[in-house]
Image 1 (tube, rainbow, N blue to C red):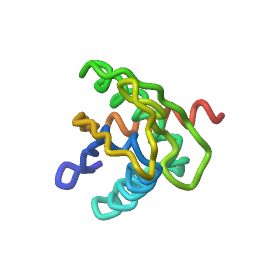
Image 2: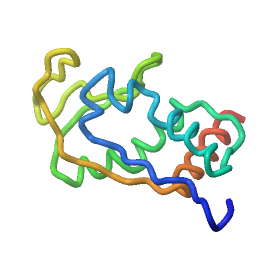
Image 3: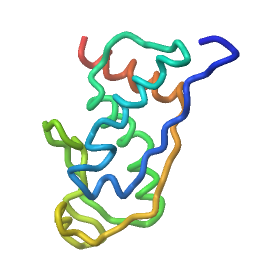
Length: 125
């Protein structure tokens, strides 16, 4: 990475865990990755859903727990959001009808994203 143009940070929104369309319909990391072409930063290929799952488990889930929420999280193979809550604070999450919200956000740095990419690629090897 050069000093003039650095990759952007990425914000993970806790409410995205409440919907099958969360995290930009599961494409948040993919879209972030594509945007980095403008700054000349392109790591080798990776599975963007696996990286999203890693980032959420490593950074967002601990923040949700620290905010005092009780939840059940699951991972699902899909072309939509691959990581979601099935329950939040004792209430079942209905992805199409839920009025639940969660006001927890975390920002991950390009370095943390690269670490997630490295973990995912290492696990796949």
